[in-house]
Image (tube, rainbow, N blue to C red; front, side, top):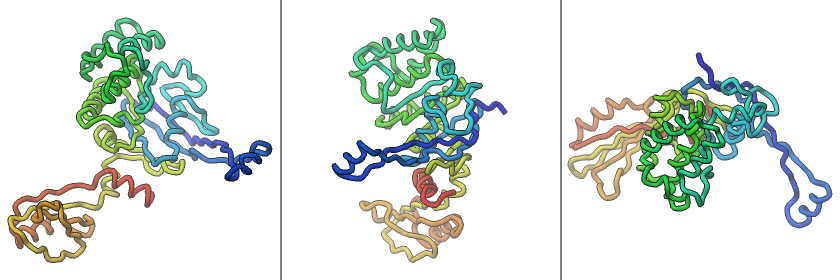
Length: 330
């Protein structure tokens, strides 16, 4: 087993200023400031193998950003150990950063008033990328992401989708072995999102780049990752496959049926029946727990007793499953 990232029992606590409300509280805080400790991360452990694509998610304030900052060397843990590709990030930051790439969906590393290619040339110099490596990577990535038409445009003239593609290339020019993606498709249209996801998948398959995603767009996770780490209140609450999450929590299923004529559906035990479309009363939804209702029996009942034109089985959306985990725990 080739482990790229090893995290053992890390914790991080911040000291936060606490003061009473209003002007009296502000004045009192100037002379006798009060602080409280907030535990951002508590005793978190996991390991990630070389070439894995892992979704690292949690609600706002869960501790995921703090964990990623410790992995990237920006913060150091209060206790515990982190090793990434043989480096201790917060102790060997200068040598370590050359092996990682970071993509922030809400913060660009491109120069706003310069053409995209000029920012790339600047990054080439900063990372001391050899000419041949730079040229090979630039040609390959810009072709895969269809960027050649705007390489010489100033960044401020780009659409959000174009800027995100340029930011992804900027993070990869020095051939990092690990890439941290933070909201890589935020604000991008549907076509642009799929182009970015397709590029990420191909990069992982061909180059075995290890990737970690933090995002609120669960489609990013579902379409790129096989493994999910969920953190909540600073603690790891799940670490395993997406398939396992669906198996354990995706127990609600939905059968959409279009009938050949207007009809009243008799009540069915343990099945919620509702309209699928307001404008089409012949379409109905049958919602049920798969542990209580056998899908084959339900379909057989409907086909036998009603004029069914079409039917479709859908799984629970991953967003609803994750929300259920946050609510109930694992």
